[in-house]
Structures are given as C-alpha cells and as structure tokens.
Length: 115
Length: 115
Image (cartoon, rainbow over all chains, first blue to last red; front, top):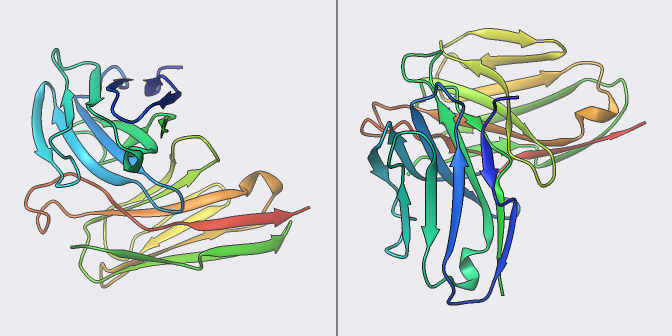
C-alpha cells in the first residue's frame, strides 16, 4: 500500500521537550499538508507545501512550530519547548496538483501527549 | 473566519436504517469533501463534490453539493455495523481563502449503529 504514512504513531513527552514528527506522502503527490486535531473537533489547518516550498502557514503555527520538506518528498514537523496545550493528533495529508480537484488523502496521524 | 456547522452531532440508529447528515456554511465553497474517521486513525476520503447541484454516489453513500454552494449533505443507505465512526464534511474555496488550498472542517457527526 502506498498511502500517506506518519511516524511515530504515538509520542509521549514532558513539557518543555522538543519533538519531531515525520510524514511520507503518496509518492507522486507534490502537495503536502499538516493539520492538528483535538478531541471532539475536526482537523485544523497548520501549513502546506508545494514540492519543497512552504506556501502557507496558519496563525495556529506559533514560533515554536517549524515544518520542512527539504527535497519535496517527506516532511517533518518540529515542536520546540512543548506545552500541554500542544497535546493533539497531528495529521498529514497529500494531494496532487493538477489531479482531481483538491482531494487530500490523510495519513494515520501522530498522537502527541504532553505531560 | 469560515465555519462549517455539521448536524446532527451524533446519531444512534439500527442496522439497516438510512442515515442523513448535513453541513452548512456562512460562506461559499467550491469544493466539498466528506471523510470518515475511525478512533485513533486519520480521516478517509469518501466522496468529493466540485459543482453546485452535483449528486455523487459511492456504493451506499450519496452526497450532494448544495445549489447555494453553502451546504452539502451525505446519505448512507441500509447502514451496517462497520459504518460506525465520525463523519466530517470539509470545504475549500481558494478564491475566498486568498489562494489557500486548506480544507475547513466541520466538527463531525458521530454515528453509532446497533446490530
């Protein structure tokens, strides 16, 4: 199966620590998105890349958050000095520019718990 | 900002019954997507809609893009136990969103199917 994959699936960390998540999109997809989802809510947009260029960042993405997609393939999302409010599911999605509309396909997510 | 109102918040039905849920917005979208999410997993794309008035089916699922472009509904016919999950609507309008490709999600409809 060549769907979107994310690693790790679960991460437990202590407040103040840094964490990094990885996303591997569907292989031919040139757009990659990060969303955050808290309990009882729908996913909220954080940022997206077209190839290696980061084209948009949400106001939700504070200075402690940084995302990269250095070679236009996989992406990493780093959270520095984690806070308890960062606890959430972090979802990655990918789509194909020029493909069928804007069909974004999601990975299984990384569940972050900040103690 | 754009908000999607999804209703009902939850539904409890018997196996074999039909289900209907809807999503409304205060602003226009040019793409509507419906996703299903199981606990601890990422959303799975069910149906994508691109034209006002469009009616699209995927097996027992049928979705429509409202004429006003501010609403959409999803119907599930002859429900089965594996239909259990949370159903999300998502909208996108790169024009009114300033060229953004982000998806705006509703809060979800939680479906429970009793065998």
